[in-house]
Image 1 (cartoon, one colour):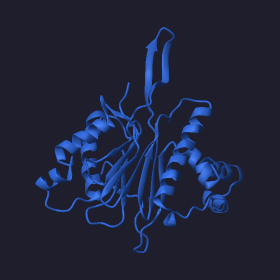
Image 2 (cartoon, helix red, strand yellow):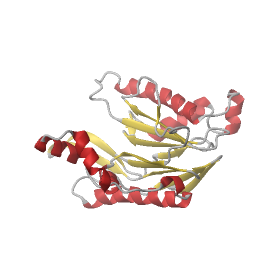
Image 3 (spheres, one colour):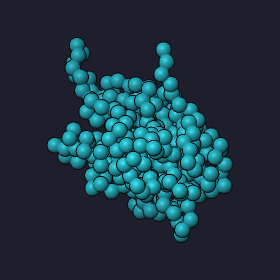
Image 4 (cartoon, helix red, strand yellow):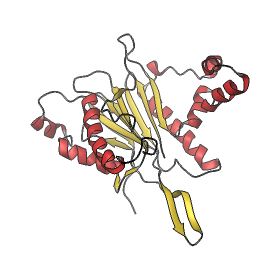
Length: 277
């Protein structure tokens, strides 16, 4: 499982993730069949830079497709599409590179592998695999965020996660994966509360949501400096990691926090895992 976060402010965009990946399923041992989380690794890379572009990828949900990690699949796509560097890109394409185009091409590649592995399953049994592609298109002043979730986006369409509003950039934060603790903190309520109140007291969920709206913390993302966006992302990922560390249940989120800040034309690693002994 995962917690990944994107924070868009006027100076750039911050991407952050935890490093836990869990293997779930059923295994038979001396004590009989064991079902659930079979293994947790704490060194998964869920935040990736595409080549040397000012574009990053966040991934959540399924950590493996068959015998391949998500990072392995992304690197294969980079190699095949010549997205390993801007110089290589120019040898194949004449048009400026675009965030949306990279998301669409990556979706096509991931979908082919996903369908090869899970195509015989019903949509209800297919694992959730989400990816967010964010950063700067060539010659663009503001960053973009595009995303897709399989199996929902098997139609090949990527979603503009934070589109402009009335011709102006929409600044703010988006989080994906195990988000319940962020929602409780940031919005002052749990998503399950609306359904519980609606069913118990016969109040439409929309009315419950509107009544709880004043509980949400107000954060001025539009004027937030990039350093504060980095601090915000780090704090929010830590909130989720702490929730899984101390609450009863498996550690579905954890490990080192990776953070990148992307500015116009530049991908800046703030915190990154390194191989070591």
